[in-house]
Amino acid sequence: MPRYAHQAKKRFGQHFLHDRNIIDKMLRALSLQPTDRVVEIGPGPGALTFPLLEMLPRLDVVEIDRDVIAWWQEQPQAQGKLHIHAQDALKLDIPGLRGDSEPLRLIGNLPYNISTPLIFHFLQHREHIRDMLFMLQKEVVDRITAEPNSKDYSRLSVMVQYYCETHYLLKIGPGAFSPPPKVDSAVVYLKPWATPPYVAKDEAQFGKLVAQAFSQRRKTLRNTLKELLTAEQMESVGIDPTRRAETLSGEDFVNLANLL
Image 1 (cartoon, rainbow, N blue to C red):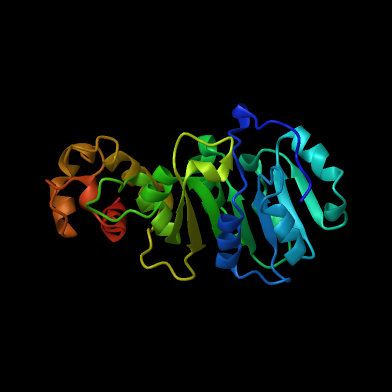
Image 2: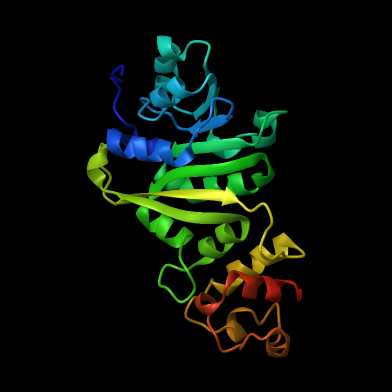
């Protein structure tokens, strides 16, 4: 694999993966087929990209770093196969990128400083996405996959699990990266629901209610949601207003939001 000579850039949150064992596990998890439409977020020096190019006739990558883009344009393995979208992934036009193809499969070692906004951006266009496999800060994966009544259960847990099946795949230590980050990492697999287990009548209202409920984590629903619902309304769907947000399931939140 060609060597990338530039330093990782702190402003882009770059920590380049180099552990081949981790890379192989991530790729096996996707069971890729040559017909799959794969988009890698942030290819960097190609730890995932080169193996993907060996497996696929076409690979789309999203990259904002001009040095990385210039380097990839010089790689012979990329010629005719690698399609570079030189932009901020937060502004990626998912529907336009998919076009008339099969739903996209997203993969990447996401920049930790913008990983949560990126995930919410992708979820806005989930009908164009088959699945997602991301390496993230372990703390974020813990929150995404957390269950009610746990310390990691949060707004992020409720919202991502509303839109996707979530699977915690593996934990990764700092030594798998260059430069090593100061935190542990983990890989999460997200698959948008084909049929959601529960449906909010108004997803914007649902998101607003969940955010409000977790805005003051130690307070009861009676206090956090008093501007939205009365205690009697909560009780009408079987929710005790003295409970706290972290005790409610996703379905509980949907039932509350559907009262608005």
